Length: 198
Image (tube, rainbow, N blue to C red):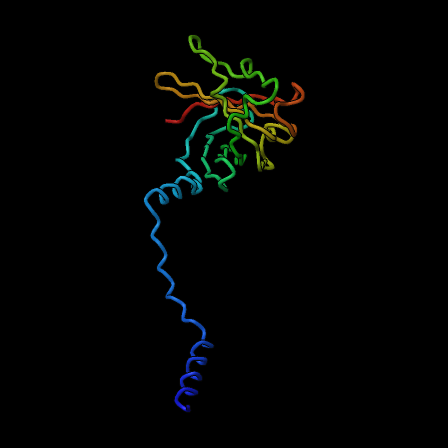
């Protein structure tokens, strides 16, 4: 009888013990397809800045407002949600820090008409899609600038580059105001042309 009681007690004790859990399985290695999917969905890193380009003031307005050399330094995107930009540094230390507005020159129900603004050499057709529009983020006007900045407060820059054998000219159109396309024709402050320094 004692043997039966002891056996029953042992069986009850074993039944009350928690069941041992199986060891966790090792995580499965991702398949090649999953890796490719992750690569496609990963955010693209911001583009790097390219080399600076130098130009010399050529038009009368450029020589009057910004004599000397213009240096355009590309700047990388500040985040994955913003495009790259450029810093325009002129010979008189007038500086415009900008962010590119991709396709901005053609936006709006009635896009701004740049054809009368940018003059192209005979035999070349004006291409509105080649106009680059920049939002001005910061403007530094040195106190001894001969005519101040391009505008009382420059808000937008549009650039157009014309190339010919042995030459490259860039014209900058400066605009004020807080909207694009501009609400009034008076938003255009002036145009300034520079030729590539060799």
